[in-house]
Amino acid sequence: MNEKNLNIKLVNLQLKNPVVTASGTFGFGTELDDYLSVTNLGAITLKGITVEESKGNALPRIAETPAGILNSIGLENPGIKKFKEEVIPEIKNLKIPIIANISGYSINEFVQLADSLESEKCIDAIEVNVSCPNIKDGGMAFGTDTNMIYKVTKEVSKVYSGPIIVKLSPNVTDIVEMAQAAAEGGANIISLINTLLGMAININKRKAVLANTFGGLSGPAVKPIALRMVYQIYEAIDIPIIGMGGIMKGKDAVEFLLAGASAVGVGTATLRDPAASITIISEINEYLKENDIDNVGEIIGKAH
Image (cartoon, rainbow, N blue to C red):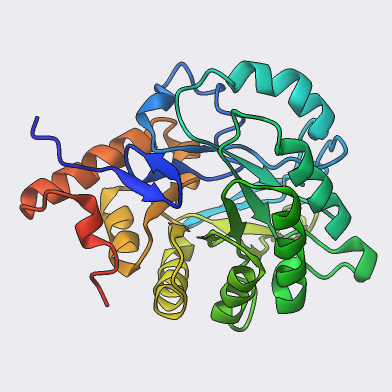
């Protein structure tokens, strides 16, 4: 097979290809061992970690939609202490860049999580999930306020020396302002989009399908919105972007690269096919072959 050069460098993260897993869809990196070798991926992003253990939201918390899924998992995870005691030993020898996703309900919690991961050599970068509700200041998500995005990023950068990725929420009026705030606060990479807020109603029971009423919409339905936001941010700021949102096949990934993403996150596709990310890598390679392109970096931003 005529393999093309799929290597991508994100700040000081060296990826063998531009495909990473999206947080929350790949567990802690070892759950899908029976389906694929994680070392064939560009990087893995772990499921979100909070300071305290979280059991997540009540059931039901997943609902299918015509072109995607709604989820209201509620950041179910063991908490940072158990993560370091139980998960780190399981993943520390994986020969692949590992990105830890952190979710805080206050600025202090984000700082605590980042500081706690600073000494973990197997964690190559952190992804700051600013879609969390700011419980101490009224419950509005950090990611809907430029000032809060700036503050969170700035404070995290004081305690964490590795690459800082800020994952943006699409539930805003101006995504460019949010990205600029993150960059000004010290973000090295932007990732987007997180899920769009949505709901489903059971017409027989006449009530919301999800126990939490609302959930995050992901899958093919959100791709045009995600693509547009990546395109806008690429034109506005000069730091790498990890684009995600409805990437189900190689063609989708190529669109994001052309829009300006340096890497792509695969999420919902993994829930349908655990090995989807491997197929997408192969299909990106096929696109390069068909178009006589030697290096995947040559197509980044070429739709502009």
